[in-house]
Amino acid sequence: MFNVVQAARAMTAACISVAVFFGMSAPAAADPTDDQANNDKLLAFLSGGYTPSDCQASKHYPQDPFLARLGCGPDSQPNGPHAATYSLYGNKADLDKTFNVYDASNPCPGTTEAGATTWSGGRVKCGHISYPVGEYMLTWTRDADLVVVNVSGQDPAALWNWWLSAR
Image (cartoon, rainbow, N blue to C red; front, side, top):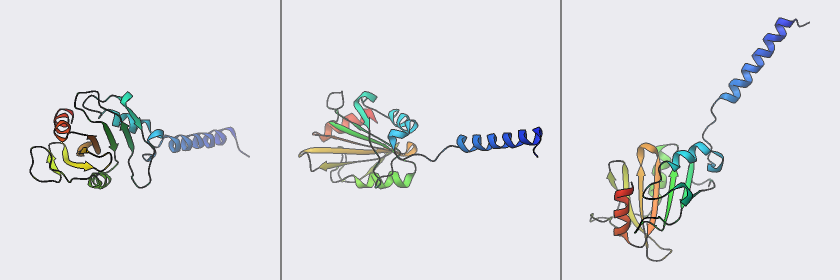
């Protein structure tokens, strides 16, 4: 027969167990629509005239383990990109994997060779997009923040100049 003290102890232990279980932080969710904290973190990295109203959260793709991704339309600044993708990752390996997927076929303005180069916050590279025809892209990382950004536009020099002020 339970007495009142034993029942109170059992109830307290059960409540503590439930509180500990539900109070533990869950692993980072890969679906950005369900993880407002990751979306908010990524929104803080918008640059070069982009605002939260210019961008939409992307659904999760199993082949790309981002924690949050924002797809953004045309930038409001003159000569800004036509589109941008901001992606937040949970580790450096996933960040590097995504950065390496983007084309690096064109030298960035001011450089003579195609390929990635370093800047004080990470790496940057320039490429060409086959569709739409005539579009160029610029991709950079913010390594410490685990963010990859890819922008596209018709003028590589304009993209470069925009990036210099936006990064």
